[in-house]
Figure 1 (spheres, rainbow, N blue to C red):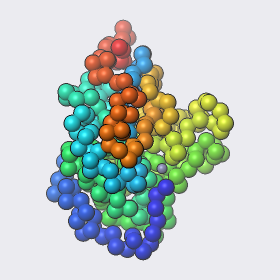
Figure 2 (cartoon, rainbow, N blue to C red):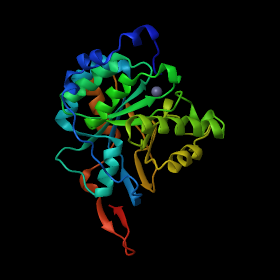
Figure 3 (cartoon, protein in one colour):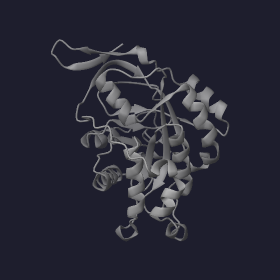
Length: 287
Ligand SMILES: [Zn+2]
């Protein structure tokens, strides 16, 4: 859950943000502009790349984990992975890893998150940040958005983690749509970039007590032009049209164990797909 503490948030100034994150302070890179309006259709399943979920509690282990990850992987965001699917190729010699950090707030940002981002940034790694956008207008913290935009400019992706960290399948239709559409609008308004990924709170994607996707989540994301619905269980491969469901593994306290889990849980190989042209001239991917 995103944390709230009025007392702490008073101490979060732009200066303290930059002090906590010297790796981010002087570096503003150009965002990678890609036409995400391009909808692809995958004719065969593609294995999900190694996909990792972190929370603030993982903060103390992140420095060591980042050092292990950078040896074996090249980091992508879900968004930049979609760009790779459009391009039909993954560049670089290392396999991709999708790192995500959940529960960042926009009225209070736990400094633990900034230290985690900095630990990854120091290793040249990027990831996807799950933003919970709840908060009254008078609680708005422009410096938090400024910090998040700085992360985005460094290649990090800002993803929807719903308005109120909602258990989406338990909600009525209108509330479910609100929990996705409101953060979509907030993130787009604050950053100028439309989010393309939903990180599901609690990984909840199935209808209550059923082993069946709640299609309303996918419909809401599709209506907004989004490309990824990211949960926890399953999602080891995906195909067809977006939005695609992919899973993640939770980091453990021990970096080597997390690395083993990442390698054993996912089987993506960058040589496993290539772009082909359909007889009608459209683009699709095939093994
Ligand atoms: Zn969460």
